Length: 430
Ligand code: SDX
Picture 1 (cartoon, helix red, strand yellow):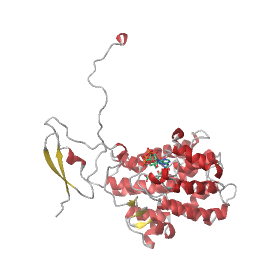
Picture 2: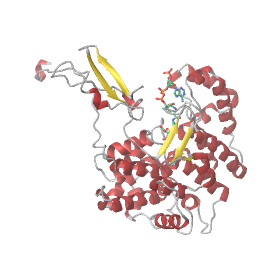
Picture 3: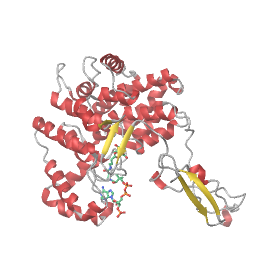
Picture 4: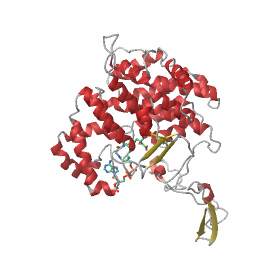
């Protein structure tokens, strides 16, 4: 009968070891017993960028990269995108179950009544140059929020912690909208408690000079669907940053600010901005073959932005839903001319061996930027549109880490490759 163990022989000593296999993993700490002598530190696992390392157990989001499956608390993403709302999905992520009507009403009411930010935040925002990137402004103002709520440091007090989680989910749209208005030289629009989450955000961003301005319902619906799709994605770069910063018991605002800065990178959340710049650089369908050739020749480290994923080696299930949302948005806004270039890029890439062999498929960022541009958002605001919904994922993963008895302050090891034991040399002798 097979056993859930790994039999290992250390050929340096001839010793044999039995390592327990649990959840498809061995415990890296079980390697430390393998020593050549009493002085030996023991074997470590070397895994740059954690490509094959599970740093936590989690019950929030399940992904099967080979099958292109994504579930939030067991619910398939396409069902939630079709039938739920971002706030209902946020409740699900935070509590593990879909809310009853009364629970959803209470949760929505709590979020609605925390959308305002302290007036000092406006003067903080005004300190940025007019052309400051909104993600820099968002990361800084979220970090600054921890100075407005000193009680947030009580990270192990569930009631206090949940209050900060509610504040972050509620205020992120307001802060993002303020950063947009600042960069456009427009006055800030305050939240309207009569509007649902996505519509409130669109109104804070878009309304100018018309107090009764109303966002188009099709655009509100599309944005809410995009928020659902971006809410969480297990242990990605920004979530890992939130968990690592939070592991030192830093408050949720400081940890989420770290997540925002990680998301800012063009290989992560910044990819939706990079996709639009890439499509504009290509300029016309007829230039696609030449661009693909440059990518394959690794000309200037060119990548097909919006393609590829560390986990999905199949179509990102979110990309399929976003592509459908594109049609609904373009019915209202008119088709984005860059869509034809994107569709041609996808068509060619999906039949080209270079991409097929590397299992490179469109990811969540490939089509989302087209929708955001069609909605009239500037390209450098796209990653803020990712950070807003991902806030609920970050705070849920933060809380799961805080409550996990196996977790402690994150402190990886290293393989030292530098020089050792050198004596100081006086400057006139160097
Ligand atoms: C997100 O982790 C998450 O869950 C993130 C996210 C979330 O919801 O939080 O899903 C959101 O960040 C989506 C990814 C957005 N990023 C991009 O679209 C940027 C372009 N994609 C890549 O840079 C890349 O695909 C990554 C970063 C997404 C994944 O990179 P990996 O897993 O580290 O893969 P790799 O860099 O080792 O690539 C393997 C091979 C390499 O070629 P060879 O060295 O074998 O010759 O594939 C090539 C890479 O050069 N490759 C690409 C490519 N992505 C990988 N070649 C061209 N274009 C690309 N996009």
